[in-house]
Image (cartoon, rainbow, N blue to C red; front, top):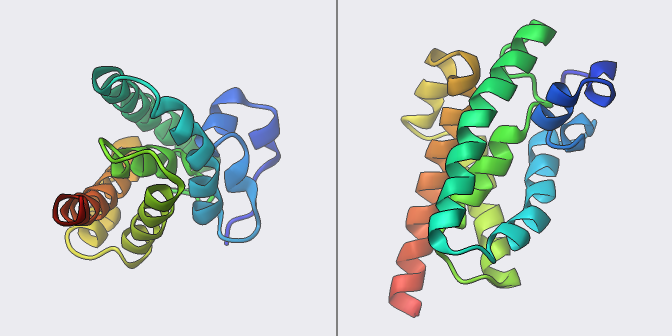
Length: 158
């Protein structure tokens, strides 16, 4: 576990990269970051699909910069408290699914599962792709795995 630096509360870039401070949690910062992403998901889920996609794209591009800059400032590649990638990963997981507490919880569990166990190629990317893009990319891949399962369930159950 990497202790959250004081700059999280002073530097707006670090504050955002640390998921509005949620990544400063001493216990399971990635999970806490995903928890913090859920209420924001319910807000952006009200947008039309094109605007939701735009939010995802801007959040990803911004996240590459935020995470890369914060990582460089702290001198730690992918500090455990950098959780902006969890925000974007969770929002991508939930793309075009029904907006309900049940789907949100299923997305949360599946996204965290894939983000934690890192099956191929997620683990490979996590170890070999560096900088802000690398920090973001492994969570995007975890989101793709989770979204594929959720959309499969929706297709067959819906």
